[in-house]
Length: 327
Length: 259
Image (cartoon, rainbow over all chains, first blue to last red; front, side, top):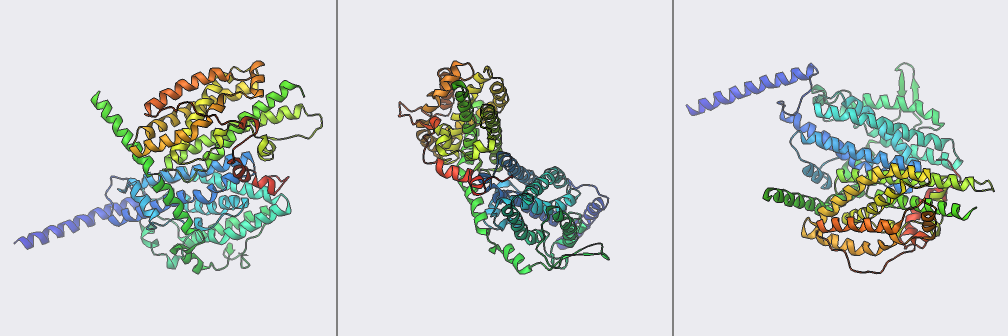
C-alpha cells in the first residue's frame, strides 16, 4: 500500500515537473525573461551560475593585464583613460557577481572557486601585456570580441543577466573605440611605434579568435544553451562576424592580421581564415598558458590579503549595531 | 621672470606633484584591492587626483610658456614625465609605500584631511585659476576625506588584528605629517601675495579633525616625533626613484612621440 502511494506520488510529481518545465520553455520561446523567483530547471540554474560567474571572473582577472600598465601610461590623459577603463571592468565584475547571486550562490564562494582554480575565466587574460600597444590591442581586439558575445547576451533569457549586459555593452563599446584610438595614434607615429602596433596585433589576434570558444562541433554546452536562449548565436557564427569586422578595420590602421589564409570569399560574402591552433587553445584552458599561474596568484593574494579588512569591517558593523541597540 | 611668478609656478607644481604622486601610488591597488567595491572606490580617488594634477600642471605650463621668452613651450606632460627627481615638489607623505590596505587608507586620510582644508582656503585665492581648480577639487576631496575617515575608524576599531595594523601604520606615516605644515619659500611668497594657503591655520583644522577621527578609531596620536621633510624642495625618499622609473618609462624610452 505504502509503495503504491509513493509510486503514485512520485508519478504525480514527475507530471507536475514536466508541466512546469513546459511552461518554463514556453516562456523562453515567447521571449519572456526568466526572473530570480521564477521556477527554473536545476540545470538551467547551474548553467547560468557557471556562465555568469565565469563571466564575472573574466572581468576581474581581465583587470590585471591592463592594470599593470597604469603605472607606465605615456601621458596624463592616457593614464586617466586607462585607470577609468580598468575601473569599469571592476564595475562589470560587480554587476555580474550580483546577477549570479540572484541564483543562490554568494560572492565569497565564487571568489574561492576562482582562487582555488576550480572556476574558469576567459583564457585571453592568460597572455602577457608586453608593450603600450597591447593596451590598444586589448581594447580593440579583446573587448571587440567580447562585445559580439555580450551584445547577444543582452537578449539572453535570464533577466538579471540580460540587464547587466545592457549596461556593460555601453561601456565596452567605448573601450573598444579607445583601444582603436591608441593603435591609430601609434600607426601614425614613428617607425618604432608602428612596429609596436603591428607586434601587438600579431600577438593578440589568434588568442582573440579563441575567445569565441571551441568549434561548434566540439562545444559541449552549446545545444542546451541555445534551446534555453542563454546563448543565441553559435561560437563559429560569432567568430566569423568578428573576423569580417576586424579584417576591414585593420586596413584603417595600415597594419595586417597575421594570417596568410585570410581572404575575402565573394560567394560566402565573408572572410575565409586560417585554422586556429587548437592545441594552444586547450593548453591555456588547462592552465598552461603563459600567465595562468600569475593571474590566479594575483587574485589569491588580493582575496586572502583582504581577509583581515573584510573581517574588521564586519566586526565594526556589529559593534555599531550593538551600540545602537543598547542606546 | 619676476620672483613672485616663479613662486606661483613652483606652488602649482607642488600642488600638481602631490596629486600625481599619490594617484600613482593608489592606482597600484587597481585590480588588487580586498574587494571589487574597494577597488572601485580607491580607483575613483586616483582618477580625481590625476584630474587635479592635470589642472595644476596645465596652469603651470601656461604660466611657464607666457613667461618664457625663448619660445620653447612646455605641456602638462613635459612637467609630469620629463622632470628629474630633484625637481618634484610633492610632500614625502605622498610617496611612502602603500604598505597594507590600512596604511594606504591612513595615508589617504592624512592627505585628504590636509587637502580638504587647503582647498577650503584656496577657493578664496586671489588667483582666479587656482581658486577655480580648488572649487572643483574640494567637492571631490570632501568625499575622499569622508571615505578614508570611515575606513580609518572601521579598521582602528575593528578587530585586534586590524587595530594593531593601524597602530603600525600610524608609526610608519606620522613622521611625514609635519612636513605638510612647514612652508617652503614659494608657499610663503604665495601666502603673502594672497594666492596661497596659510599653513598655520590649516594645521589647526587638520589637527582637530585628526584628533576626532583617531579618537573614534581608538588610535593614539604619537607624541613628539622627528619630522621628515625636504620633499617640497626636491629632496625625496628613495621611494621616488622606482616610482619615477615607472611613471616616466615611456616618455624616456621613446622621446618626442605622440601617444
